[in-house]
Structure formats: structure tokens, C-alpha cells
Amino acid sequence: MHLQADVRAENHLPLRLWVESCVAGLSPLPTSGPQYDIMGSSGCLLDGREEGVSSTFLSPRLRQETLQFTVDAFRFTGEAQRLIYITCHLKVTPADRAPDAWNKACSFDAASRLWIPVEGPRGICSCCEARSCDGTVQEPELQGLNSEEMSWQRSLAGIPPPEMGQGWLNCLQQVKSNGVSQREPQCTHCRNPGNH
Image 1: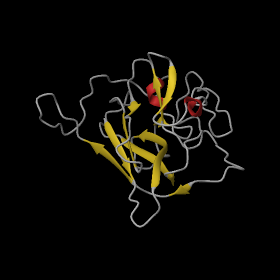
Image 2: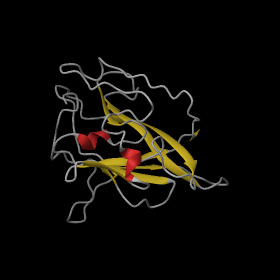
Image 3: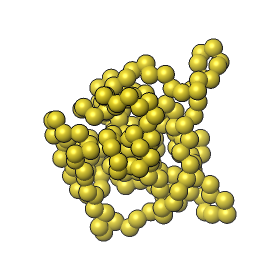
Image 4: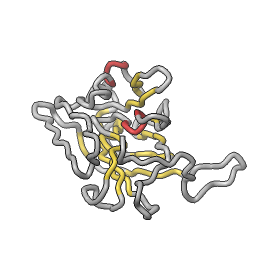
């Protein structure tokens, strides 16, 4: 799936958009039913860390106020529903503010086994592996428990929040090699996001 987040910066100082977190679920309510963290830890594309998955941010950006990423198609095991809702938390910072551990877009590169930022020094992604980018350490998910049974509380005490707002998250149509667009992504690599 090709996803794009945008913010309109009309009559505003130049902004840089960040995707802080994204959760997939079977309901438009992000706290209802089974869930899967696609992105977390203030901009780490966690889904790309899974074995055999190629989810990644697209680099370079088209514009500072746009961020594109891909997520491999998946489904929830044992669920007949084919529709999956993705809820993302977006934030913006002034475009001239340097990326840091709280404002970043990091993908996991399986070949080098490193987290790589879309922009900024590699060190800003060093917290992605431990999922501790916000000052608290999240314990690894326990075997046999799914994300519905576990929840994480994050504390940003002492960290000034960036300007928060709402923007668009677009699901872009994929184009097959014959030039014909698809209505929905083809699941060539179905996997269960509930079992890690």
C-alpha cells in the first residue's frame, strides 16, 4: 500500500510534516478491536522491522509538508473482514527545524540491519530498535499477548510539544506494470500483524 500524509501550509510559515504513529485496526475507532502498530516511537516505521517485510518511507520527500511511505499488504488472522482502517497521528514543525529523536521519519533497512532516516543524521533513529524515543522504554511484546491485550503509556513530560494539527492521509492507487491502476492493493505477502 502506498500512503501519503500532507498538510496545507497556506498563509503559514513553511512546515515539515511528521507521522508520529499509525495503528491498523478493523474499526474506525483506533482503540476498538484488534490493533497493529505500523508506526510508533515518534516516527519509526515499526512494520518494516518484521522479518520479510519491505515497508519503508520514500526518500527524498516531494515537499517538506508531504511524507510518503509504503506498507506491505496484510490481514488480521482469523478475521473475515477485508477492510482495515489505518489511524495516524501527524505533527508539524517549522521546516527549518532540524530533525531529532522526536521529529523524524525512520525506516529499517534489512540489508544493513540499521534504521535509516529520510533526512537528518542516522543517530536520530537509534532509539527505534528499543522503541524508547520518547524517554520511556517500552517492553517487548510478550509471547501470546496481542496488542489489544497490551497498551503502552508514553510520557512527554519536559519535552515541548510541536505544533499539532490534522492533515490528510491518502492511500495512493498502485499502478501495475501494464499501466492499469488497481482499486485495492493485492495481497501478495499476507501476514498476521498480531503475532510477532
